[in-house]
Amino acid sequence: MTKPIPVLTIDGPSGSGKGTISQAVAKRLQWHYLDSGAIYRAVGLAAAWESIDLSDPEAVAHCAERTEIRFESNDEGELHVYVNGKDATRLLRTETAAAAASAIAAHPPVRTALLDLQKRFRQAPGLVADGRDMGTVIFPDAQYKVFLTASAEERAKRRYKQLKDKGVSVNLDSLLHEIAARDERDAGRAVAPLKPAEDAVILDSTGMPITEVIERVLAVLPASLRPR
View (cartoon, rainbow, N blue to C red):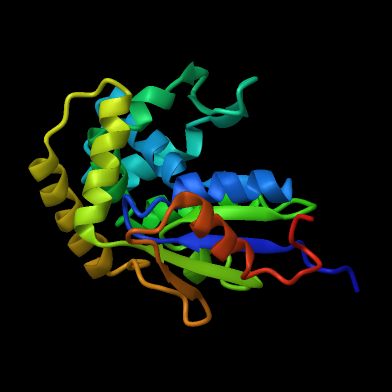
């Protein structure tokens, strides 16, 4: 029988660093990369462009089905996301886009519309998938799973620095409030609530440098798959 294509899922709450870590791990492994959060943000953005009510599940689902999403890396290795032909990378990093993604992710029809799209990213030699339900819903059969977390205070500080470095005006207290509210909403939703897969390795990165987190994640893989 053909061996299944290996998948490493990295789930976790907003601001846990899963995007940064996942991209770095995918680059080290030379595997494909799936940013599921960007897909939901992209659909939320596309819906906003069409003035669609985000509380209307069917309308958002139809929008999801016709939205074209493309990931491309530039010469510096920076990931760019194109939504319906437009470079939406900067817009997708805003807190408004993040809140929209969290809102529409609670709709079953939207999740169904994007399920197959995400599964198609599973290609040889392997896939690193980051999100909130990669190991529990999208790739429950993944051989390797990590749930990356950190304290709400640490995540707010990371997000604050990230946005300030990009020239975005932001308030730390507001960020902490938004992160706490999103945590509660994501953990309490009826569909695909944010929680670790039963077979996931839970990694708390509070106070941990990025280089150490990357090595801890890579250590989840067998030696035969790790970069030499």
